[in-house]
Image (cartoon, rainbow, N blue to C red; front, side):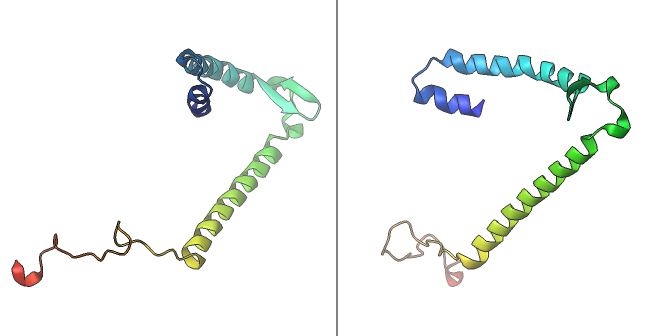
Length: 113
């Protein structure tokens, strides 16, 4: 939906297209949910869930692969964030105007309070 919200104005398309995408997602989600519940993807193809022998099911192996993939992506993101914090020290600006020093007029000094 975010892609449609970005692409539709860029291509000067009608706002009705964004509404149609939202409607299709709302209608398609329950259908996809029912199909995912009723069928299982096996190496031999798509089969009804009740026709698949649990001892031959590969859902556990697929789930473990997805777990390791997600953990790997999360570790990569954490490593990038740590690298940015440690090695790429970017100085924070103290003033919005380059070359102008902060006068501190808005902050009262302790002896003025």
